[in-house]
Structures are given as C-alpha cells and as structure tokens.
Length: 133
Image (tube, rainbow, N blue to C red):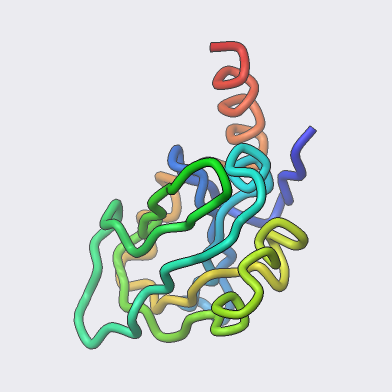
C-alpha cells in the first residue's frame, strides 16, 4: 500500500502539497504516482517564474523507463524554488517522494483552493478506486 502522509493535501493528478509558513507550499508527486511510473530517469523542472501559474497548469514532466507523465500546479501561485538535486538524481522521487524528492516550492496566492484538494483519507479512497477501476 502506498504511503499517504496525513499532513498533506492531494490532487486527482497525484500531486501533493505541504503548506509551511502560511502561504509557502512544497509540491511533489505521491508515492502512488512514483510507483505507477516506475524508475524515474529524468525530470523537467519548472522555471522559477516571474508570473503567476493557475491551479491545473502543467508545470513540467517526469520521464520514467516506461512512460512520460506531466505534473501540475495544485493551486494558484508563483514558483519560488525548484529541487535542483533532481537534475542529477531524479530517482530521489522514487526513494523519498515526500522528503528529498520534492519538486518545487510555490507562494500560494489563493489559499482557499487548498480546501478543494483531497485530505489523506480522501486520497486513499481515490487511489483504491483507481486501482479497482
């Protein structure tokens, strides 16, 4: 069973966000997503933007041995940092998706949107249904 930390919020496209300092969110892909992708060999990191991104915008892509998958902004905001370690060791996402495998940090401009994301309990049900379907 995939790990689903309780302190995060989740999207239907398998991103997670951890909110720190009120309006800073750290974003990555879930344990379930990295298991589905398999061995990650490359990641397209987002540029640190000088403009706003909107919830659902494609931010970058992840290349695994068997597929390529896009990842998306979980909420509105501005990208303020990216995990440059992933350029040399993209498999950190496989090893530690909720820790060293984070992808980017963003300044959240619409915090109400966090309430639209799934809780850990809701996400667990979502991935169980996805596995059955």
